[in-house]
Image (cartoon, rainbow, N blue to C red; front, side, top):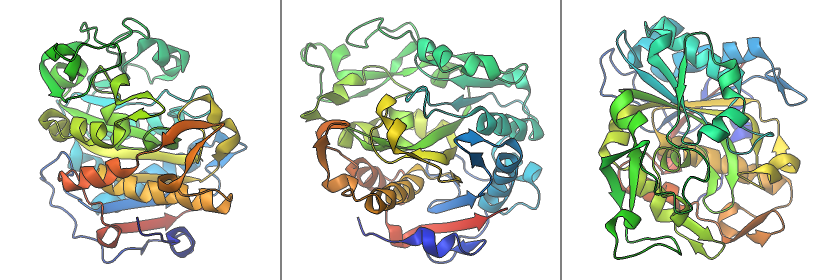
Length: 369
């Protein structure tokens, strides 16, 4: 991937489009889904006061979210911006990210501003559903303790129910992704072992999804930003994608799952929390010594474009720290996979899931504060 030092260029000037001219604002009624009405458009909102000593600051986060959604849509108010995507009667899921506890997970301040936006669009609290696949991780991350009043939560299964991740209680037997890929103890002659089934949360309970990701390194996939938050959170039988440090298929698994028609249809907005990020040691507890206060939120309907930008942000930080880019880095004490696979972003672009060419991405950075 072509390297660019775009942060230094764009953070210096409020609203400067870093990659060509911004697309025209979509009309009020737009075709939602992946890559959505704003293919190739990424809005980055930076606020120096958004985090202090790793503690999020509510008012700056609120200002960032409101400005970001307006910049993405071109709407004159933040209420109208949310109404581009949502309307009364929608049942909206918010896909959180609990991996990385206790150091780097979806933040309540960001989540609660998403809920505020949905309510402005006329979505009732009872029609907002927070979700991650493992209820044990959801609870241990504390998500159930700070959900706004009336907002529901759900999950697909518990951690450790089945070593092969093939339990079906929370999954839809009629909707799946099939690949010639099985876990080490799987049975290649059994179609069930070759499939990853979509969560009933997605297929039966909600009609739209907000993908709330974090800006984070991942040992097998290279990064976990927007695409991987979907691929490994909305289906079962995902461990087969990175079964060992040398048996790594994330490069193909991630785009294959996100390409499922229901995921493409229902995921309408990606909000990436880069207020605090991790440039190595991900996705779990080893991120602690690689955290940095990036102080930026990213918004896009295009998961490929926002992942393309996010990968470069992380690589820039790695370069500043004397580390190799993710695509060229090998295993070390804090990242065990032989080679990481950020190529899942490029493959997703080739599947039509979004814009992966940096020269065609319109990055608009707004500096607040």
